[in-house]
Length: 321
Image (cartoon, rainbow, N blue to C red):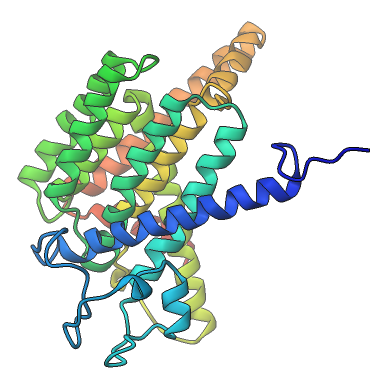
């Protein structure tokens, strides 16, 4: 029997491909880590070359091999032993996993336009998430280009909808930008622009689903944090909790893009399933969806207008604890 070791259906070949994808993603993630590190400090992302913040030595190729250099040096500079920012390692791991996801979607038959859209979105959302985690802000120098990229992609991609892209961006900005302007302590303009960017990659309905996913995951994270604090007998209040909302928005927007891909398309399948039900069931489901959407938007708006963006999460945790 003839066996092709490097055939596309061979397990070893696929493992090799996924390893190369992870390594390529880690290399791209190293650059995104530099972006997340330098933009808050208002430094160029290209000059000067990568260097140690402790001894200012310029890093060579042996110092810049993704993951390997970190493991070999035990997370320290090989010249002065200054600890390397763990954000670099986190960025490399996140982007490596992200590239594996792209490879998996490719195997499912996802067209190149869908993969490019997800790659562009991830290349903005990963550094934005890292910056928000550390600095609790989303810089305009990244959110505005992300918004412009989503709009421009709708003109280039053959299967993209220009109207959905512009309507999604407009829906987010028209609702949230005025709130961010008049209530800056409640909602940052960076969050509004980031949601506008997500809308440019998705649609108006994508904004709603993104908010639901982001708010739900943020609520679960907040509850997990409080349970952890209680288990360790630390009397921390929910008022002490400062959760960056950007990473949850990034996850929600990415989930919407993936679920809307033609090869997955869970959203359309759900709506088709609803349409195939008897009239009475369809009326019930439609009313429930409309009511749920209204309740979520009402709660979000209430928390924001009252001057507490985290008020959407905080009151719900207080009811439980």
